[in-house]
Length: 293
Length: 280
Image 1 (tube, rainbow over the protein chains, first blue to last red):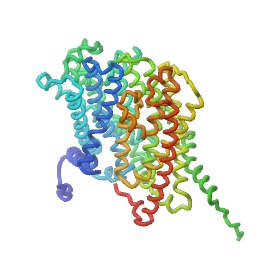
Image 2: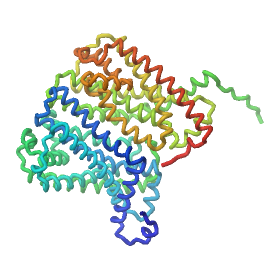
Image 3: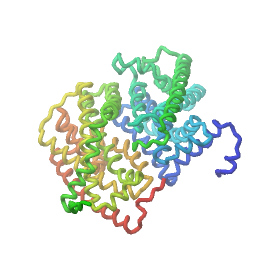
């Protein structure tokens, strides 16, 4: 039960308190708009439909040959990519939600809240709902489409470490987009989805990067999500990664190192951009602007 | 003090027409004033189209499937417009505080919805045309139009039925209040799947394809594919004339249903007086 008086008298470290309460708030916003049954249907149908589009496309072209390594490559890449939409887009969307829908952003700014910690906290609920979608999608893939994941063969430590780094990376990218959303006059509502759409193309999520024209491939190699998805696939089904030459020359340790380095770079850039945009939004009085997205 | 002549007010069909033009105006003129849509609504959807094109190429699919993706990807703009700028529009208007003004104004709500549809259709046609032009150029899509009049008829009927459906759903979504946002969100990927935006629906079971045909874009897209791609006719779900007849029926059904539901919603607004309340 939420206790307002206890929260007011709380002497917790501000970023932690902001994060904790935003996590609770985010979960309420994500889940309390309907009854649990409809919420469950909503959480299952949308991700499954998105996966089934690719499954049908694949089935039509290959006449239902789901044994090729390309199928699990596409299926798993698409499943884990749901985190990008959920976390990165979700964090940046919080700005629009608070500013223009609930019209509470100005109060959050005037309260003793660490806004960046608050945004990351709002992302936690998205991680939970996103994880549910990913689990359902992969579960259906294993059960009905013979995606060859065997529990005993999963590299659990690699999977766990990669997943955590990736989610942190996505939250930081979300913070970057949230900063830009604060200062954009037009199309801020499209920003998260647009960037997610672009990354879908360049990160090898649903096709190996070799398929891209040679001049576009370097963009994919600069994106940390490319390495994140590759590591997740390797952790779950090593044989999938071996079937495609794109990153075959790199060991898991190499890929993890690249992912860590790129996460660090993107993380620092995200925090700096957010701080800059935050200051500019305060200076120009944009905190409570309404863009009528 | 000069006495001003009494203001001449439009009534009847003149008022209806002025309302349609007035509501369409911001959607048409807005695009001319804010050119950044060219990037956000043409370039970025093309990236999503490109992702599906490369998936097909990774699968070594026949080249006409690339064309299916380009046309289907462009048509998603219409579905998104109907969902977010038609079906959810009265809900947005309520959130912004305009709905009460719409209801008390002397004009017809049907004219307001029609204006939104006309403006939205114009703006979205430009966006979709942009995606088709850019996608066709990037991926060298080959078209072979077999009958231009049939193609234009299919497009016009599909759009009339689709925007009629949007007008009908706007009343339904308004009554659903804050669940409207989530329902619009939910109605994206499942419709892309069932309506065959990226593959011919002929590959579905007959009854699934027939059920999906309630969405006008399903048959619209199927007929357009048959009319513009060399191998389209072999991949069609039904013949083009049959699809034209069904689309014509859908036009009438959705427009009549839109008027009926709008009337119900207006009566509810008067009786219960809670349509303009904002529950977040």
